[in-house]
Length: 147
Image (cartoon, rainbow, N blue to C red):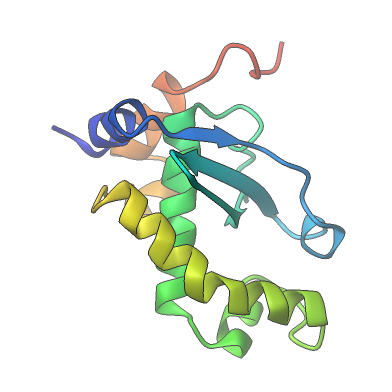
């Protein structure tokens, strides 16, 4: 079973609902977009890197992939200064620092909900190859895709 299959199964079996709330203005000028994940009694909102414009046309599995990539990025860059730089954000902005501190609870909570589901590798994502290409091609939500 490939990564795309595991993402799709996680959405289906975990009864995950992913939505796209408004992105706070402090993040909207960059390529960050807000994604909300709801499962049972848990609701999490996380900023995802949407450099390639996947959020607006993405299926729930694609959105989950972006959420998991954001979790990994936070885990790899948990220092607020490094994380802010990685996203082109101003570390002096209180909203940025407050959001970053909230990730201390959000990321472990998300990981607990999805229980080890993998995401497409970062290089594969950037190159749009293999599973990334499959996810982008097969995962287009016809209700949100451009005409």
